Structures are given as C-alpha cells and as structure tokens.
Amino acid sequence: TMTSYYPSHDRDVDIAIIGAGFAGSMVAIKAADLGLNVRVFDPHPEYPNRFRAEKLETDQYDGLERLGLVNLVQPRLSPFIDQVTVFHGRRRRIVPCKNHRGMDYQSTVNSFRQELKKNIPIITNKIERLTDDVDHCGIHLKDGSLCRARLAVVATGGSQQVRKSLGLRAPAA
Image (cartoon, rainbow, N blue to C red; front, side):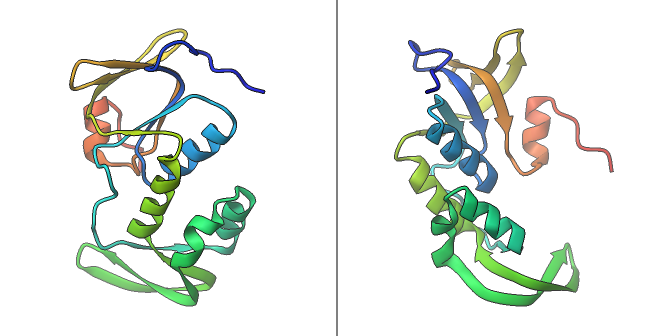
C-alpha cells in the first residue's frame, strides 16, 4: 500500500499533472489507481470542441488494453484503416498504415476525463508559474494559491503558449 507524501493538506500532493488531454488524463487515472494523491490542472473543464482525429497503432491499442483503459476508447474507435490524411498548414499528404484504428480525439479525451473525475477534480484555474525545490515542485495559480507536489508532469502536447508561460524551451529540431 502506498501512502501519500503530503497526507494532511488538500493542496499538497504526490503528483500534479498539468494538462488533461489524452496523456495527462491517462497518467492521472493510473496514478490514482496506485493510491497516489493526484491533482490535475487544465484551463478547460471539458476538452474543447475542435476537429481532431488520431490513429492508434496496434501496440498503442495493446498498451491501453494492458492499462485497463481500452474500454474508454473502444466505443469511439473506427474499424481498421489503411491510410491517413495528414494536414500541415495547407499541405496535405496521404500516409499508408497497417492495422491502425481511427479515433475522435475530443470524445476519447472527454471519456478519460469522466473516468478521472470520479476520484480527481480537474482544477481549471490557470497556472502562472512552476517552481522547483529540493523536496517539491510548486504549481503557482493565477488566483494566488499554491499546490505543492513531489512530482509535476507537464502533459500539454507541446503547446507553445504553455511552454512560454512556464519558462520552458521548445525542443531542438
């Protein structure tokens, strides 16, 4: 049995996850399953309604199955697909693939969030900055409150706006 590092304070947690998209929500669900005290931060109560489709490769699907999360994706998956259309700006290209499944990103992420909300609230207060100390990370919120965590996971999909606001550099090309 794991015990929480900060058992007596609501804002002091084992893991703070910044971003409740696909990866952030999965990490939060599994960390909570392990008995860790988790907080999730995302500016949106629901994943925004934007057109976005993704594909799951066979090993990704198998990984979700091993994690016990495939049931949250399964009803939203397409049958197997053999190609995807990739748009980058105005450029469009067709990429062949084998044994992949298409999924609607928004409904899948919101399905993960519904599961997540059973045990962990999504804090929609914006993050002003992160600090790192010897024994904890500080998540400083716009309203002046602070969450301290043993570990902070930034799962924002590489958002340039988030990187800039947190003082992080873009990955080298």
